[in-house]
Image 1 (cartoon, rainbow, N blue to C red):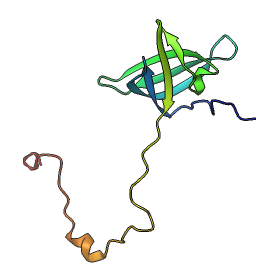
Image 2 (image 1 turned 30 degrees about the horizontal axis):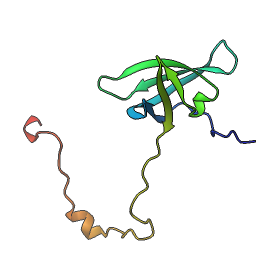
Image 3 (image 1 turned 180 degrees about the vertical axis):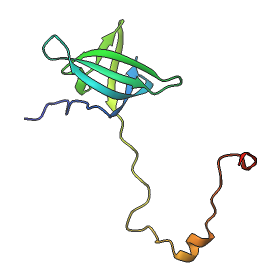
Image 4 (image 1 turned 90 degrees about the horizontal axis):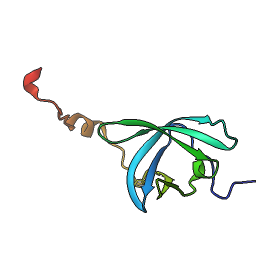
Length: 115
């Protein structure tokens, strides 16, 4: 039987934290550890901001699937991030000929003087 909220988040997944109904930051789940309370989890994650921040939230079995909760009185939820689909149809991609490959240029991102 499938859970109505879907699958539990997994380590390595990138999520969007939404706070007060506003996208706040992206996070990557580093680890999920069972809490001492049944059906509660320690969600260790890396906040993808500058500087990077590691933190832990303790969430229940519903919240680790995306159910909303509150933290310090503010509504919070986590959403899975899905990469946008490519606008190119794989069947329509043209194959690059060997002549085209020979004419291609590589542009360095680094200053050429520092070689």
